[in-house]
Length: 77
Image 1 (cartoon, rainbow, N blue to C red):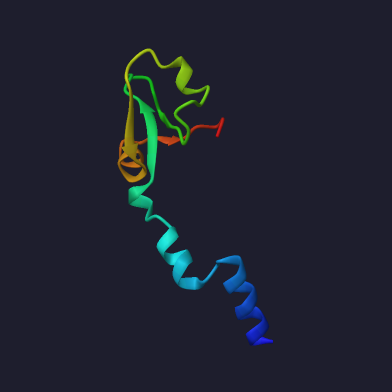
Image 2: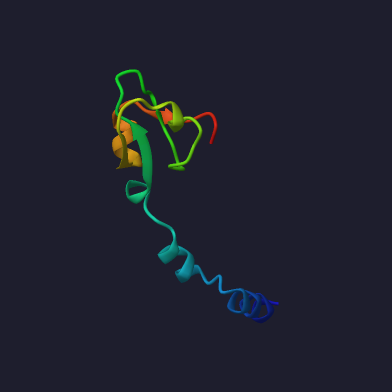
């Protein structure tokens, strides 16, 4: 049984060590925010329709920094 499971993982390319390498730490996750004074959300996609309303500059920032600025995830995500 264990050998069969290892074979499935090997074939699918999902070894535990590969999963740990592939997962990015949360502080490396990049999000997008509008720099306007009334902006309060962060966006996972730079083409999010929520960002289309931005009248100021759109910047890329890491997720932790966006959250420290009080931003929450866009409801359109």
